[in-house]
Image (tube, rainbow, N blue to C red; front, top):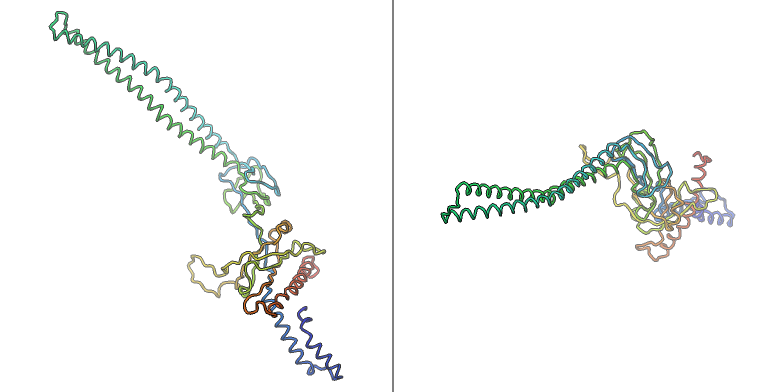
Length: 402
């Protein structure tokens, strides 16, 4: 409508000329002016729509984090309610942990048992060393007796007796075996204390850690900061372990790592005009009000998707046939608000209008009068956008069939 009013001046000039000359105003008399009017109208429409594209297929996407239990079981406690804000580490719900607690208790008992064995081995070593000392003293006595008898035998002394010699030799052999046995006992205790028992203690501690991990998994905590927007869990229910059927859903907070973006699907022919950094405006249905305050927000294009979704292929048993693909596909554009404080005013998931403006034209028109004129027509497109916002209000309230 605005374009028709702007470009109707040839017809108005022709009618004024005919009135001035007092000639009859007929279709034949103004047909050239009407033709010029229509040509100017379509030229203006093409120029505005080409250099200042817009789309009504825009929305504010948001991600959700499904909450599931790593270990299945009966829900025993729920610590949150729907709509509650949670931070990382906050407990959400718990499942039955009786078997996990039993495993932890068993692992702790095994650790206590090994520790008791360590204490026992430490207490046995001094007595075993005393036995070695006693056996060595007895061995020295037996060796001295045997040496004396051997000397008497070599001297053919009347004090030498074969029976005494044999008894001394048997005593020496027995003392030697006793010393070896006592030393082996000490070595065995040291191996137990230094190698075997520490290994058993490490294994028991590892079992305790594994059991504790299993016990911790019975208390499900939040991994992100966000709001619980869906809670279908009750005490006594069986906790699901699959993301397709989560117990609850968390919508993460807007952060620098998870920014709020407006995603719009433009016509593929707009690829030549759209570029990163382009000035834009966004208006979402959830922000429209009768006062029209905070309804249109300034934005900038931050990213343009290089691929068209309809062209994606996967491993299937059929050949690609483009005519079977539904729709032509959109050129997906991502935009962000210029002022971060506006992010709190937008509702995630809203349907929006995304209007882009060519404010720095390039190519052969750069710096020319026609280039400046095309850039100035952005004002007219901004007015049209606000008229669309009013229309969205009427449709949304049911006044225009919505």
